[in-house]
Length: 477
Ligand code: NAD
Image (cartoon, rainbow, N blue to C red; front, side):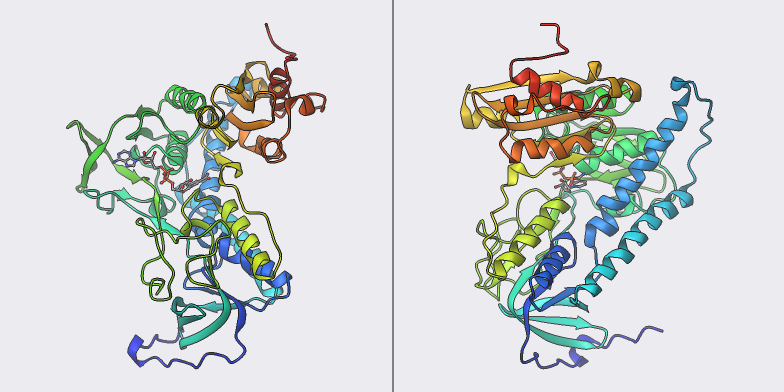
């Protein structure tokens, strides 16, 4: 049996250890555990504090379970559409508990591996809710009482959490992504509030699994941060799949009753569904952590203020991952964690330029990008840019898979490739080469002679580089 937790005021507070740690990390998600592993590799004494499981949002409530559902959705589509390739199958439906068990089995395997890694690295795992009582001391309230843990450096890695809008209260039918991941039944008519990454991924999952889906987005396109050509192509592709997309539609309120969820738009229209997913962004977890008292300033939205070295306004305190304003992506958190560990160890790692972090949305068709969109490149370089849009229509492997889509590349005129934007089934896997091109500032003429294996979707990147270098191969002009 678990020991009963003593009320807070009765708990004993231990004295801080004399020697203390080199680094105390608050939050064991992607940013926090990456920092712990790298710091330990560099010979530092590390404590990792978290009230929940090691692995954080990405492993337990984010990337991994969602991508497992997206894979199941792809399998359902393949089964339903097998006749296209001359294979006879019948699609009998979705086994909700079976789907959840598959999803959980993937999470469990990775969780076990991660626990082993952290233990093997010699990191001290301190389970409990932590808060700063000084810039160098974290109080950890665990099952045995409260322990004061001292560190020469403290890293805030508490991540982000779901948020909703005023007038949209979460409930049984109005849910966040946390609840949407645990549904035992596929909704029949699903409403999705917010056409960002989470909204589009869940819309894709539910549509593949048999739901009628409507996405409502306030701005003029889905995935509004992506290149306009890609967002437009995505809307076309989702509509073709039967997903209803309402852009330029602001939501005023939502309510639910026993039978349905109701979404009221600012123009007075009401949309009904048996489930409403709220996906309007995630907020930082920075409240009640003693940050202000320890001298760690927050911005107006509650994100931790840092300089480009991820140093907060309190000396010796750093912040990594989703608590730092910017892209809320697990791989950004990993990089932040590594960079901060190296700085603490006295190394001088390069800062992480935000626009060169790769972004992938795993809907069907997938969207992947790195670097500048065309409008962002125009803002920096005016008309001194060249762009190419290479359709996947001529790409053999894409035709085999039955996907349409495109590669869009942007270069600074006479200079390197500054942006790569991809749309198409499985195109997320091509982000590896795309990010090398942008981060290593490759010129199209450097890429043109490189041989891309045939038949792969990867060839489409080679073709786009050939076109930008002025030597297009599979082209009518
Ligand atoms: P988001 O910021 O990507 O999208 C939210 C969307 O909601 C925006 O397009 C916004 O215009 C819209 N919106 C806001 N208020 C609205 C209103 N009143 N009416 C209609 N639309 C409104 O946020 P998200 O999709 O919730 O995702 C949260 C974070 O998690 C993002 O930073 C995302 O990058 C990250 N994430 C990434 C992945 C991935 O990399 N594959 C997957 C899931 C989540």
